[in-house]
Amino acid sequence: MATDQVHVGKLPLEGRAPSRWRWLVIAVGFAAVIGMGGQIMARQDRAEQARRDAYWRVDGPPCAPLDPAIFRSLPRYPQATPYDETMYRRTGGAMTCTHLSDRIEGAKVRYQVCKFNAPDYLAVSLGRRDWFYDLTDARAAAVTVVKDKVSCVIIPPFKM
Picture 1 (cartoon, rainbow, N blue to C red):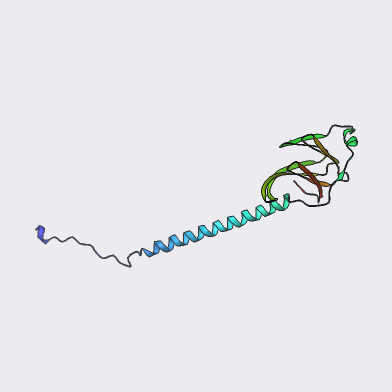
Picture 2: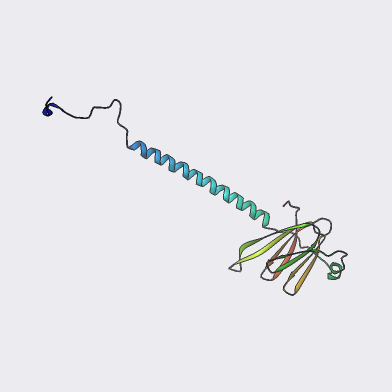
């Protein structure tokens, strides 16, 4: 066979040729699925943050003050827990603390909040000052320390 008689060419394939638009549709579909997943995760993060804020944002009537002599005359030494520059001493119960940030008088302030579940007595020491509170009858309390100002409020019972 002579070389001038041989012809090499493409044979037609059966069916349609693959469309380049198909890949665009697939890419847009993946982007939509990823975008929806991101929105769902962001919504869950916002819900979790709202739950945490509701847990730590405390409001209630002020704690009853306690005579320092009563606290100092307790038969057993109270449990002491330092948190930042504050010393908490309590008889009974447990405590949990965190920091919150809020705008106070136009400035962003980071402060501490500690929650106590049913201590009988509570003493808060900050610098050279002490505050004493009577929380008998299994009351829960929350203490906030903002710019060297200590406040204690009675809160509903909570679980840790």
